[in-house]
Image (tube, rainbow, N blue to C red; front, side):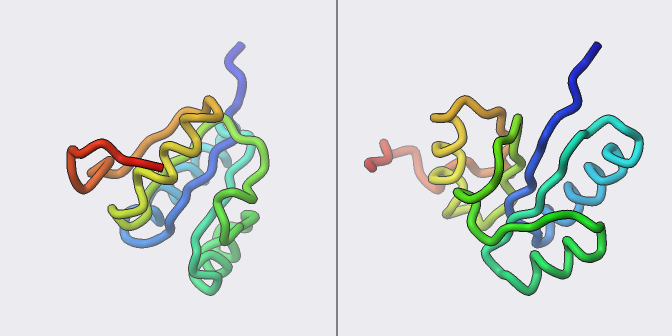
Length: 107
């Protein structure tokens, strides 16, 4: 038996809203257990959450325990957010590009 996933979509702009729609359909079919929306723009996050009857957050570091995240934020934030979730062992899907340059990132 395959476990149902707990997933968050971080960023609800152009691509993020499509991920939310598709994952909500999978949730309605019983293939996703929990789905969360996260966007630093409170108004946009609240509106998207209201449209799909889902919980939302404005800070990705406040999300509950998850199996995976989809990162659909502006490109310059991909690396930081992805690194955070990779370090805690979560699966990620990152809208391209992962970074804006190939130089080693320092934190």
